[in-house]
Length: 163
Image 1 (cartoon, rainbow, N blue to C red):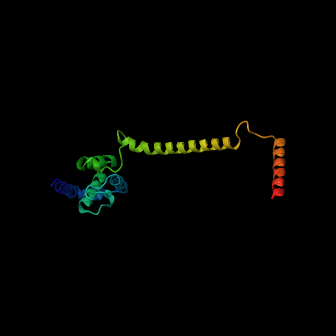
Image 2: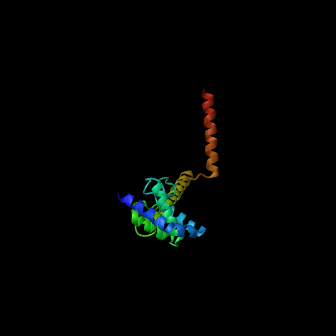
Image 3: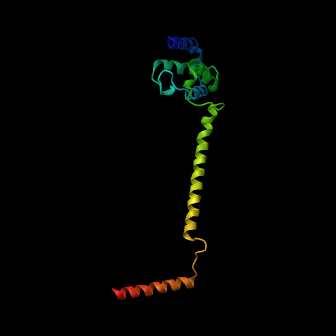
C-alpha cells in the first residue's frame, strides 16, 4: 500500500510539474539526472540499478528525478531525497563520510598491504637463496678447489680400474 501511494504521488508530481519541466530540460540537467540515477539501486527491481530496471514504477521514479534535475536540484540532493523516501538500503554508492568511508578506504589499503606482503616475501626468499649459495666461512680458494678436483679424478681412475 505504501509503495502504491508513493508511485501515485510521484505520478501526480510528474503530471503537475511535467509540462513546464519537460520544456526546461537541458543537456546539463539530463547529465545531473543520469548522475543521480546511477547512484541509486532500484526499489522496484531488487538486485538491479535504477537505470536498468524495466518496471513502470521505476520509469516514474526516473521521470521524477529528471523533473527535479530540470528544476535545478543537484544530483546529491536528488539522491538524498529519493533515499529519504525509499530507504538507505537503496544507496548504490557508499557515503564518503562516517561508516561509508571505510568502503572507500579498505580496498586501496588492502591492495597496498598485499603489495607490501609480496615485496617482503620476495626479498626474504632472495636473502635465503643468497645465504644458501655462499654460506659464510665455507668459501674455497682456487688452489683447494684444484686439489679436490685432482683427488676426484684419481678416485674415478681407481674405481674404473677396479671394475
